[in-house]
Structure formats: structure tokens, C-alpha cells
Length: 122
Image (tube, rainbow, N blue to C red; front, top):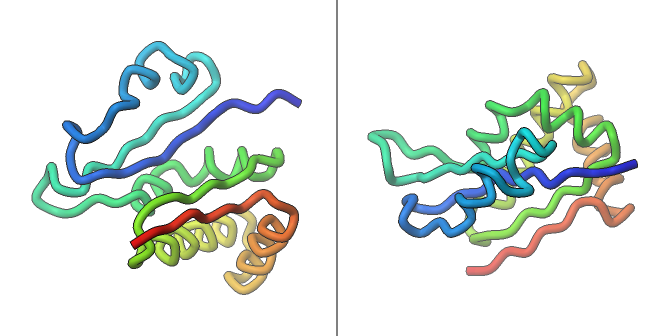
């Protein structure tokens, strides 16, 4: 099975982001099977974070997860890991129709299998 990179990332503003060239024509472009969705939290009146972009792309995320995709979460240790986990639980629950607790258990199974990684720092 071939897998394609799919990134949902975030930063304060677009000037800080250096991967945008990969989105247009590179390996992360949808035309090449990838996906690249960025949350710039400070560039609009209301803050947009990674978990918001995840919810917008929930069907694609579930499709990838159900095909065996791995999840890598990296960023601030403050609230981000918990907020991303909550969004992921919501996505799995809504897309499969299982209770949120069952979705959480399923994600923990991914973690034990080495398919859910968190690298967080303060």
C-alpha cells in the first residue's frame, strides 16, 4: 500500500511558514495524493488552529486513518496536544458513529501500535 503525505500545520502567520512551496506543486499537493492545510492563527479576526483545520478535513482524515495512516503531532505543549486529540476523537466518533469513549480507545490503540506520536515542547 502506498501512502501519501498529508499535513495539517499551524503557525502565527504565513511569513513564518516555509513549506508552502510543497503545497503548490510538490509532494504535498492534492494532485500528487497529498494534502496540506495550514492554520495561521493570527491572520484573521478570530484565531484558527490546527484542530479547526482538522475538523474541516474530517472525512479525508478518517479515510486516511482507516487505511492505516500514522499521526504525528508536534508543537507547543501548552494546549495543542490535548486539543488535537480531542478533535481526532470527535472525527473518529462522528465518521464511524461510535461513542467518543470508543473513539478514544481506538486512538490509544494507534498509539500502542506506534501510529500516533506526539512531540511537544514548552
